[in-house]
Image 1 (cartoon, rainbow, N blue to C red):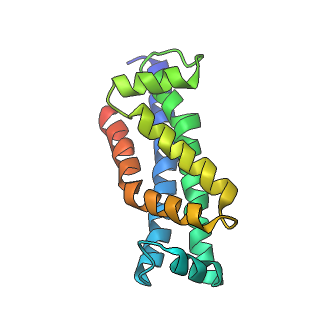
Image 2: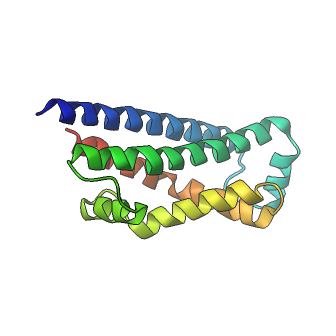
Amino acid sequence: MGNKTLIYKQKVLDNLNEAYKHLQRLNDAYKQLEKINLFPLDEKKFSKIIHDIEYLAYSDQIIYRFSKLQDCMGAKLFKSILLYQGENTDKPFLDILNQLEKWGIIDVDEWFEFRDIRNEIAHDYEDNSNITVDMINTLYQRKHRLKQILDTIQEMLK
C-alpha cells in the first residue's frame, strides 16, 4: 500500500469518525425525547417541544446534528472514499454518488431524499409545523439507514 493510499485511508477514517460522532449525538437527542413519549411526533407533541426550552434544545440538536452529518458525509466522506479508491473527485457530485452506488455504499435516490429532508427542515423548522413534524418523523424512522451507510464504509476499509 502506497503512502498516498495510507493518507487517503486515514482521511476516510477521520471523516467516518466525525460522521459517527454526529450520528451518536443525533441518536442521543432522539433518545431524550423518546423518554417522554414524543415519538412518533404529531402537532400536539411538536407544540410541547416548541414551548419547553429543554425539549426544544433536543429538537434543535436533532436538526443541527442531522445537518452536520449530512454535510460531513456529502462534502467530505464520500470524496475521501473516492480518493482512497484511486478515483478522481474533480467531477459533478452526482457522478460521485453514482460511483458510490455502484460500490453498494449508497442509493442515489435515497441520498437525495436525505438532502431534501435537510434542506426542508433547515428552512421551515419552526414556521411550518406540519412539514417539520413529517421531516423529523421521517428522519426518526430512517436514521438507522445512515448508520448502515457508515457501517458499509467501515467494512470496506477492513
